[in-house]
Length: 122
Image (cartoon, rainbow, N blue to C red):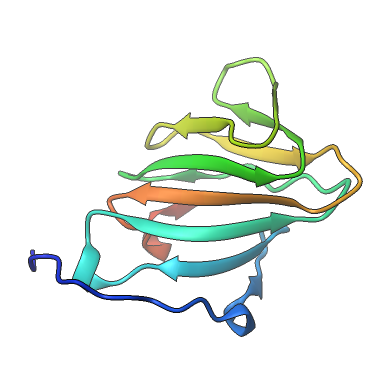
């Protein structure tokens, strides 16, 4: 693993993509120069529920930035989330989130180690 070096990564809104999971994702930091962590911005439209999925060998944390929603993680009962709530999702644990508000639900997804598409399981 390479040692982390000082760097500034500028946000580029044009890199946002709509995923099969039914949300918009912008990778903010995800590179081999910082293997231990990736950060993505996720945006879910009102009334949308993302698809059930899990990440193999990757712990994910959702940090709600704005909006409100209900998250389902593993066997926990659904939990209401609002601004600055944090949901910790263990590796291999099924998850999905629903935007229950009238504006976009925006959250940061922090993955350790960094997110790799090969870790994604439908």
